Every structure is written in C-alpha cells, then in structure tokens.
Image 1 (cartoon, one colour):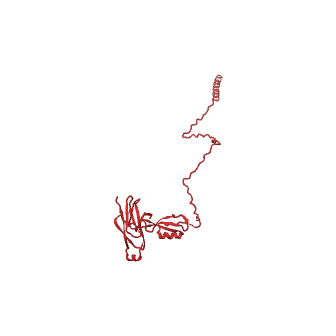
Image 2: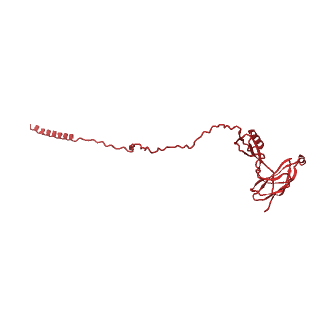
Image 3: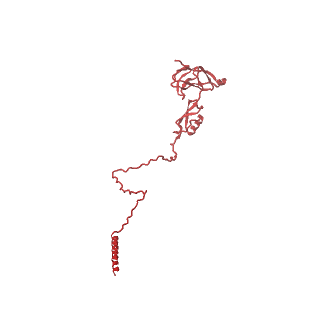
Length: 261
C-alpha cells in the first residue's frame, strides 16, 4: 500500500509540468515574415504627370507655317497661234545667206530690200552680215528690209608705189581696201579722170572725197586704226575699149602717202 501512494505524486507533478508548457505555447505564437529581395537590373518606370495644354489668349496671333518648294516644275505653256493684223507679216532671217538667196526669201515673204556693202575680209563676198529690222519683227507687207552685204576689195598699200587702175567693165566703180593708223596723216592722190575719189569706213560711210576733174589729192587723218575703202568713179567706157584691152583699160594710178611730221 505504501508503494502505490508514493507513485501518484510523481504523476501529478508530471501532469502539472505538461500543463504549464502547453500554456506557454498558446500565449506566444510564432510569426513567419517574408523578406522580398528586389530584382537586379530592372529599370524603374516613373509615370509622367499629365499636364493640361496651354491656353492661348484670344488676342495672340497663331503663327502660320509656310512650305517653300525647292524645285517646282512648271508645265510648258501650250503653243497658241497668234493672229497677225491684216497686212502684217513676220520678218524672216536672212543673215548668213548669199544676197541672191536672201533677196528671194524676202520677196517670197512680201518685203522689199536695199543693200549696203560692208568691207569684210573674213566672209565670202555677197554674204548677208546684218539685217534691219531684225528677224522675228512684225512689219507691214511691202516694208523695206535693209541688208548689209559683205564685199572684198583688192588691197592698197601705203607708200610711193603706184596702184595701177584697170577698167574691166563698161560702168561701175573701182574699190580698194587700205589699212590706216590712228594719229597718222595720209595724202590720197590719183590721176583717174572719171567721177570722184572717196574714202569710206568699213561700213561704207562716206568720210571725205574730191572730184577728179577739179583736184588730184586729199589729206586724210583717220580717227581710229582700221580698214578703210577707197572708191574711184563712177565711170563709163565703151565696149570697144573693153574689147581692145582684154586685161583691162589702163586708167591711171592711185597713191596713198604717209606724210612725215
């Protein structure tokens, strides 16, 4: 009996300790926390705050944008025929033509013409060098077109040597080209007995002359260095004289002297 009594207190002590341990577990709960590790190399997106559009005052002009084209292709205008007034025609171009061809072109176009000779060494004789009115002008039908025709004349030297004059046609003039210098003074002399002796510039503008029956020379001082034209005549001889001298009728001499100061 005494052995059983002693065991029971030990049981009660064990039960008390067990109750105390369970009480503590209920009063102190275990908390579990999660630690979030931020990811690496991840960009942070910052939201852009929205703004209200600015308000333009009523009296503020709104600028305009002008676009400038750097290259504009303009279509060619359509060709329209222009009706000329009655009795008018367009002057054709005859520059560069031989004067006989130019004459025919102008006649076919309804115009008349006049020639003016120009001393020209670089163009064939008879070539039309200029015209007036110019090509493309609108003129009345029958209007006169003035033509400048090239001609070449034998050269005349300066000095004491005589230029022999020979007539090869029954009528006409004898023409010679001579190169004179500005500032020099020249004596032009001849014993040609027909008409006049005249000196012209290269466009055949008369500069001076004398009648061969009244004098036999003139003094000439050129205003510029250039070619000039000496003209003798007009003359008239019979056909019998021409037949008698097949190489030309001897008609005197022409001299151009440089006068010394």
